[in-house]
Length: 421
Image (tube, rainbow, N blue to C red; front, side):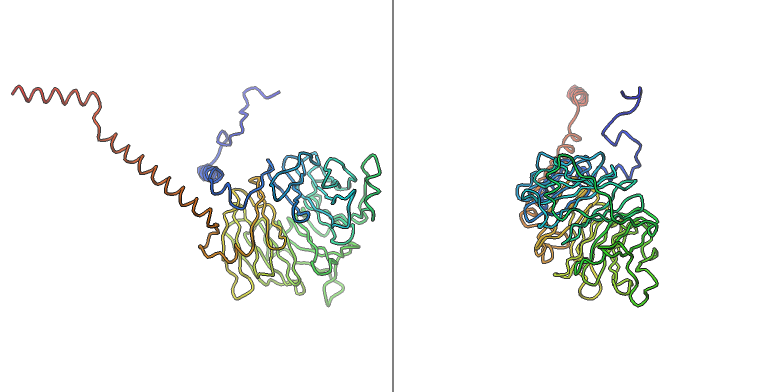
């Protein structure tokens, strides 16, 4: 039952907003209605904000949604499955185990939520919870999986990182009538002084797990034991990038062979030399950087920011520079992933969009990426809008020059008086 006299509304204009906030809201709503934006990146729309996603083969994606659900979707048809893994809060992170771990032929996904738990379920049957990972005392913010072993890593708002080991054969989980509750085999707490927002494994050997979060530091752990990695040449100290270069929250991290990339609320994305822990590259932005994605095979890094834009940076020759802007989303970019020749972006605008790497990098139509067929539509819409504005101005001018009925009567009387003279 609602409170008497309360202002209950879904329209944010009914609440106090500054002029700048209202202008930003109107701009966002205009962009959401833009027919060009409706098609850019062939968007998949699950009907809720996308907080995270992970790719499952070439045709399937697993989505973590604000609607307290995790769903699988077909990347070709851009349709979600009707069934969903349901949580007691927004699903902040998802991950998919490698293809050697299956149940009845289905790949296995994990979903982490504000409800403090992680669910394990078959991608083909999201409502069939095989196991539940319990142990965190606050929101689970991120999840990662080992590429070859059944080991799962979770980071939480409780400032801890937990290491979990799933059964070698997940078929044993499917035989149970109730989900198996699994406890962590290792909990790391005390090194990070804030929430854990992101984790990633080194892509070469997967022996090192990197973690970061609201304390603006980055730490490293043995991916199988959870023991802190020692600094090379100084076994007495742990490998750590301390708060300093990044001034505040680090929202994302991705590793390449020699570089660790981080994205921060201090408006920068930084590439760190992993061995020396020194800054190699700093990419300055005008707003919060929410996601980062290195694509070393073409020498670029993609960053996603708070207003929904994507920036493509050339980082393999000379001074790093932005070579492309994609006005991809109308709200925060929440996640970036690469798969072969394409990369994907998701946003709080409730869309997942697909981008061909070569088409974006080699685009010759200008700084802002816009495929030729959509540029034609954009030009057509611009011409139509200009025509409508011109017609409106002409109509307004004609109305201003026309006499009112009273003015016409007065003029007729005046002319009659002149005739009598």
